[in-house]
Image 1 (tube, one colour):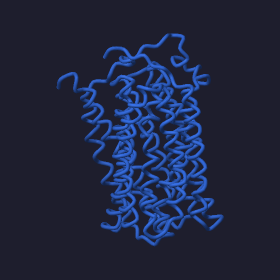
Image 2: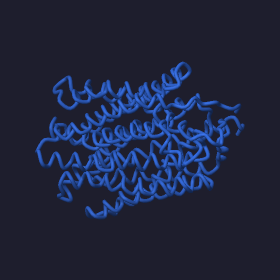
Image 3: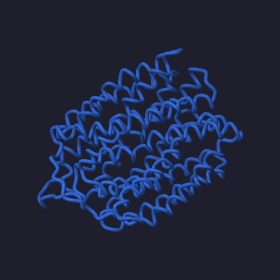
Length: 406
């Protein structure tokens, strides 16, 4: 393979794996009404399954990030994929709630090994001014994988009359793609950047003084709280409050997510890179404004009925996903390559600690206490608004990067 094709091959394989990553996460959301029925548990316990995943995910991330700055990163990615693919497949043998809770927690460790390291490999493969587009492609995994998870979960669970069947299908492809990843070379750290050794972005202890990193992280944390809670409960909302069956609710929602995911995520990355040429804070301001626009649309998506409901959901998802690439580009650009894996691990810990590690459970408890799932969504509305404001404020800290020759 010509050397110039390696970055794109690496991006393609990592993007495919990221799609599988989100398929695995979102299958549960598609079939959780069936899990609730079989194990006879509360909404709060259903939400705890996702919270348990994110607790192990975020506590494993700092150690993995520290190792990623010191040892070959590809090895840790391969290890993580084997863990999550294997335990996803073995969901077939889960026969009570506690076993499912354990399974979901272990998968969190495997996914942390992948999600913490993969963006750093992409950042080292492309120069700073192209990272918005490249990371937008990688983070297509979020909408495309999420949509596929809803589709696979809803369709196969109904077709096979078993909510366990989709997990078996989702577990195998990762084992194939990881072999392709093993054959590709690991990019050299920091090959596209120059940093002064006293630059705050080169020092781990400087993270507390790094406004670009802090605002990107806190903005992403509030985004994660909102999106993490909504994606867990929207399929259940469509079934419980709008009368759709399991298959229809998940397939309709997956179509909205995948169309918006491809269009909005890629468009957002392109716009972010274009704006960056004119304004160094574009990776912050642009996604911040998009989130503020999304807030009233999210409200409409939950309270609209009849023919207005799905257009409202469609518009909300579009603006929610528009800033995906620029926000993640802002994060990787906020620190130097020498500490990037550890910094991203700190980011993972914080955004899930403050975000979706507990928002699904919190929303489940609110639904249990108030008897209204719609009321529970108000927490997501507030979090999304706070996310937008933090990101807009963070533009003042955005670094003025100096790229080196490739």
